[in-house]
Amino acid sequence: MYSKLRLLSWSVVFIFSSAMFSHADIYKYIDSKGVLHFTNTPTSSGYELYIKEKPEKTSGYIISSEYDDFIRQACETHGVDIPLVKAMIKVESDFNNLAISKKGAKGLMQIMPDNYKRLKIENPFNPWENIMGGTKYMKMMMERFNGRLPLALAAYNAGPTVVDRFKSIPPYSETENYVKKVMEYYNLLNK
Image 1 (tube, rainbow, N blue to C red):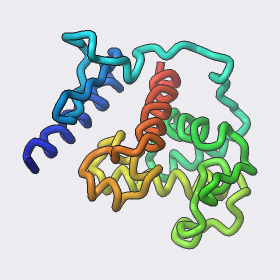
Image 2: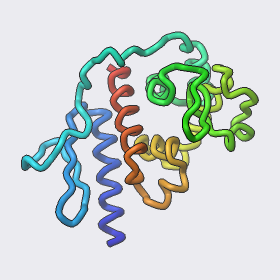
Image 3: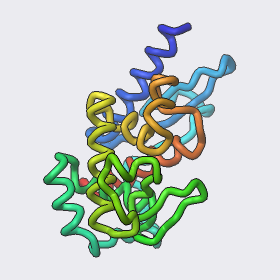
Image 4: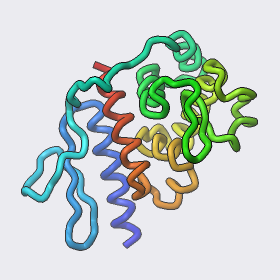
């Protein structure tokens, strides 16, 4: 059972990583045993679209340039892709530096209070501090999960110990949707 889960985890990571570079639609299917399958070539009508190659542009596809200087500086400092951080901010707060989540995460990159000290954040609503701290945290997640972007994003959203426990993207709809949305915007911004 463990080897099947490990294989599934690697398959999901491979598919998500491949989707970043090959730009193909990804479909998912849950079989009768509860095993989650991903493919870019569905073989039956049971598969449903999970990530679209070129997400449809909607009125919600407005990416602010207001914080571009801060984002660029943070990305240069921490070695993270600018389009990734912009995609994360779009999904986290829609560029609202005063955003507060139901769980208490604050600012543009929705930083939890427990992380302020280690990320050197005194005021989570200060765009510079928040972007620097959030980008640093994302770099930490990328290093922890060996550059596997979907897992690093899941860890940013749900916490790294949860991702460690599942050894894949946790089966939480919030986290699955978060990874999916960030990847969609990231792919759009990379075109």
